[in-house]
Image (cartoon, rainbow, N blue to C red; front, side, top):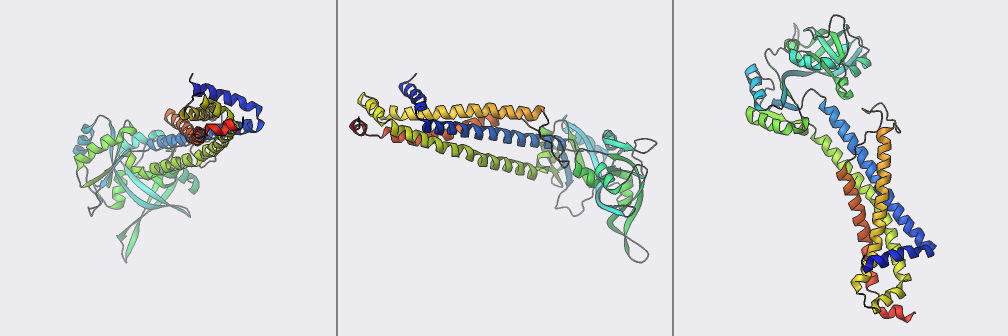
Length: 406
C-alpha cells in the first residue's frame, strides 16, 4: 500500500470524529449509488423495450422490401417466377420471396368504415400466415378468391366476425355510364389474424393476389416484393445482394432502413436519459468536493508535517485524490448492486403493470454488460475529476501556514 492510499484511508476513518464531515461523505456515497442504480435500471428498461419492439417487428411478413424506384413513373411491374428463383439463389439466408399487390382502400361494414391497406398475397404467402389466424369461418382456414383476412383490432372496432360480408372501396376510379365512380367489391371474411402489432392489425387486410389484381385491373402485376430472412439482424447483407441483382430500377430497403427513424429515436432517447440521470452523480460530486475541501482545511497541520518530513506536493494531492476514488468506487459498487437487484426484481416479478397500449403488460428489461460497465466508469470518472480540485488545493498548501498554527 502506498503512502498516499494509507494516509487517505486513515483520513476517511478519522471523519467519524467529525459528524458533519461524516454526513457529507455519506451523502456523497449515497448520491453516487443513487445515480448509478437509477442509470442501470433506466437503461435496462429502455434496452428491454427496444429488444421487445425489435422482436415484435421481426414477427412481420418481411425483413426486406423491394419497390419500384422513385424515378420510375409506373409503380406496378411484373415479377416472374424465374426472377423469384434468382433471388432465392443469392443467399441461403433468404427464407421467402413474396410478390405482393397492395393498395389503400376503404372498408365498410354496415354503417362503419375504416381506412385500410388491402394486400394481395399468393398461396404460399397465405400458408405462412395461417398460424396467425385466431378465428376462421366454417369450412377451413384457407384464403379464398372472394375472401379476406382482417386484423383482430380492425375486426373488434367494426364488430366483424368470420363469415360476414364487407365492402372494399378503392380510391382508383373506373368509368361508369355517366362519370367516373370508385371501384366497389363485396368480400367475405374468411378469418381474423393477430400479428402481434396492434397498429398493423388495425389497418391491414389480406386477400388473394388474383382478387386484388382483378379489383384494381392490374393483371399479372405487383407493386412490391416482400422478402424474409432467417436472421433479421443480418438482413443488411441479403439486402445488398438483392440491391445489386435488381439494379437501379428498384428501391431495396432492409429491415434496419425500414425502421431507421424509429431506431434513431430510441437511440436519441437513451442518450438523453443517460445525460439527464448523470446529473445525479454530478450533484453527488459537489458534495465530494465540499467534503474533501473541508478535510484539507481540517488537516492543514498534518499536511505541513508531512511536507516537513519530505512528502512531495504530488503525494499530498494523491492522498485526497485517493479519498475521492474510494468514495466513488464504494458508491458505484453499492449502486451497481442496488440497480441489478431492482432490474432482477422487475425481470422475474410483475411489479409494474403496463396499460393495454403496450405490447407487454410488464416492464421488459435487459441487462447489458456494456451499459453497466459504461455507467460504473462514468461515475468513477466524474468523482475522480471532482476530487482533483481539492487534491490540487491540498498540494499547494504552504508548509509554513500549517506549522505556524501548531
